[in-house]
Length: 460
Image 1 (cartoon, rainbow, N blue to C red):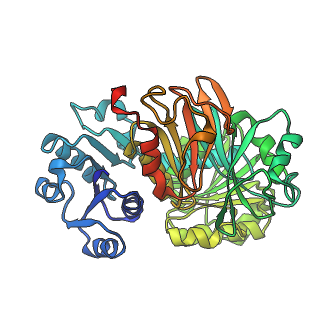
Image 2: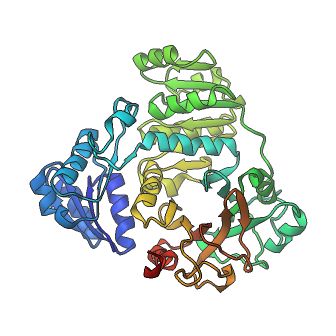
Image 3: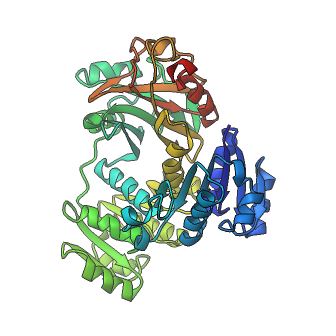
């Protein structure tokens, strides 16, 4: 159990608090908004403190004297950074994490965020995280989620099985016959939002949400087993020229034809000057049917709505899809909306809160976790755990995957050993320093995984 102070009770702070409480941590949330704090306290077993999270007396009241970490995710970058400074200077808090959104700070990361300057141990930038997230979805058309582990060597991919996929209607065991030269592991199946334990005899049905683990170079071949393989996207339309929209255009404009629709004239002019001539910047309203028609929406492979207005994003994406756009991706702040819209005419709903939580998890968990990701709106989790020690000091080193006592609904998908990717089977032997990729259907068992991979005292 860790003692954690969260500064900020907004959407990210509330989602993070829920995640940490469910993993049996001692959580205190600080915010100046009494209503937000009351809502949190009514729902979860945690403490709340009303006040400015950058004020020393408020942090002391929150328990900063013996806190393990402070996570500052308020709406103001300055409050987040100063909270970390105070936690370091007055309370010597071991771990300090801040959400920093402004490029005016993040572009000077190396000069600003140092122990002798601004002592923030880890910076989280939601806009950069979401941009990377969307870029991966564009790289793998048809995927609902793509997560990379072990420096990109292995990936966990979520796809919706559909008619035309070679494995649909067949048992998972048939994968070996279909793609004999490619090794993969189905980590989880969700059918009508209920988890199904994937066995060799399990029949894949249309509309199953399937999570599989594979060497990153084999992703598209495995995807073809679950749905008809889509052509790579060429024409991309982005609604919203903010940090995410502009960042996405910069990453894609060398390999794709990009159009950005920006409602604000001044911002549209700024983007036109900043981006290369390969990106077409349009001033206008992406919910305008006439404008979409004039810009040949029927030729667009992916329509991506990333403004700060959930309703405008959803309406524009629905309109674009009905007018012929092949795929739609929508940024949605309100978590309740994500479940409502994904899977219909909106193909992918993207939650910046979940992207931020995923970035935070690897710093919150033990040092034996190289990375961790929140999945399925926070219900599930994927972890990259490092096996430490030897057969005497470790519960996993020197043991086969089939021998391990894993929590219910937990699957080991792959083992990365140096540059080698080993898709996990029951007889896969785990060695010291292996990176083990796990999928947890229920994140409440994270603490059990931490204990399983924690080396004994003799290791130290």
